[in-house]
Image (cartoon, rainbow, N blue to C red):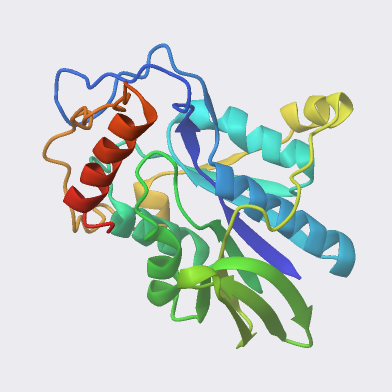
Length: 257
């Protein structure tokens, strides 16, 4: 079982103060820390669990600058066997389709039974790379996958639908699954494994090596801005009768009653 996992290095923004840079098209990243994209981490863990159960190899692929090799090495420390970094130098601005096209050119000549990606990147929220990559490769796919069971050239998967529903599918391999967070519990790498991963080779490819000089850009960021501040909580003051009347008025104005 040869598994390819696509991972992305993203800034940690959950508890950081985010500011838009002078271009108006990106955020200031100098003081931010970076780590593997959350759902990609679950995809990596699922690949390692499948390898431990069925044997085979796990290959990591990431598109980005040299700095993302720290994230790649952590994946190697957790149990991946080999890794490829596709340098983003010269590609210019990338969207979900362009990234999928780069990955397609990188993966198409590899031996694989399964490709795993995260369901969404926390920095852009496109949720497009996985399905687009599968379409470009001409293989079946499923998104928001919460369970994977491999059986004799097929995969039985469960995936989330709207309204809290789950859908069960049987998909012929090779296939691509975009993994939902919570499918497993990602492991931590041991100190010894981290030291060993530091000595492993990461294969670096450029545009010429993958045969793609200019990926197709379908969308472009024109402007970034923080969301407008909405009305804050209203504190109702007064006695019970006064506040209950005011509360009823608010319910009526909002169409609740």
